[in-house]
Length: 541
Image (cartoon, rainbow, N blue to C red; front, side, top):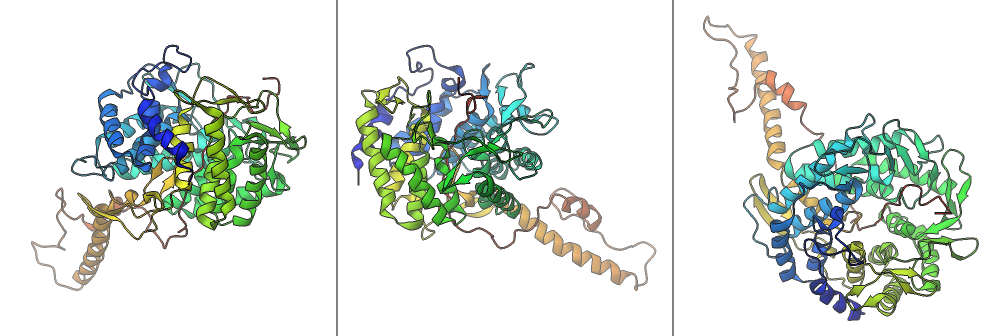
């Protein structure tokens, strides 16, 4: 097991200046959209626990509670704030008890990290107030959407909310988060072309596609990921059916020799024959739906590129077999390592451990510097850039560690679990099957059922009582009525059962009963980052 890098990473977490107001990577003033709410600390928090650093996890939780403030006048990416901040806080909240943090009464349905996640998510809600229900890409955390904000948003920036927002709705009882996430997903689904593809950027005010290139990479990727993960997390057949329809179109129009190209969304003609490093999440996604053979073939294609350069260049020209100009860098992205971890859990194929070994050796040999692990600016000569992305700590480190740690609690097969008593009844947590968001923050799916059970049980009782009252009234038709009495009605005071008449209105709030789970396989993570508007398609940029 290659622990050399992992030991170094453990020291790194304690050495890096990840405090509030830390300087930028070039020594300049901090970027307020990131450092002002301690982005890196939040993003790396659950990594500390997975690596076994419980004391540092506890310390960082205290730091966040004392220093994080979302009432700041900065423009923040709606997408990035959701996956990194909301996702990171939700994950840390649900893992707090395992990390030895003293949780408050009512946990996991309450707690300081949950309240922080809810506050951050509410800052994003103004972005969804568009005619289509698809969100703007940027929001000011203090003032909402700026008047001059561009309405053009990438597809992933619209369809990557259901995991975090559905979790937040389940824990807080406020349906608004899941509701807006579902509307955004549906609007994208309704906007697909006649051949079943979606483009890269869309106008959220008009619903018209601005960039019509279709593929599985930057600007689109996590939309497909969240259809699958949302389906598993919520046991939602419709979301899975949507993805499977997309998967057919992707196979028909974008796949060539187990590579995936970019095509025109309406015609299916090739527009860009390149492989992007962000696409390396796809084999993991294929394995989630049980398509192991295709996943391994695609993975091996991507692995050949890694072996050629010691990393994955941002763009790789498939016909030429070389990097694309101005896209030669490798910012220590996790996607291929992520797919390796997930496929290894599914197959046990030692080839996947070889990729992990190569990744450890490459990162340690090429990118390790005195204060961390630097982005590789150019894979051709291994020149470094003076920065380290937070996703390196949140994702790359985590996936590498989990690839080589089969006994980690994340891999629990249900043989052990924790029982928690909540105000809503008994709750089972920590049994496994964690759903990773696109920034590798694990969500315990069982937690979604901890804060609503009492209400569901109340509805079941009310159903029985409604039937009883209905039968009682029917019998009363055949009985002689007295002058002073009529059919008995149950009381309607607060905290008592509803009468049959009032119950009809209450029933409208009742969710559909959960059927036998359609999906039972455990989920593991994929990741993606947004490209700048036009970045993917402008060769001269």
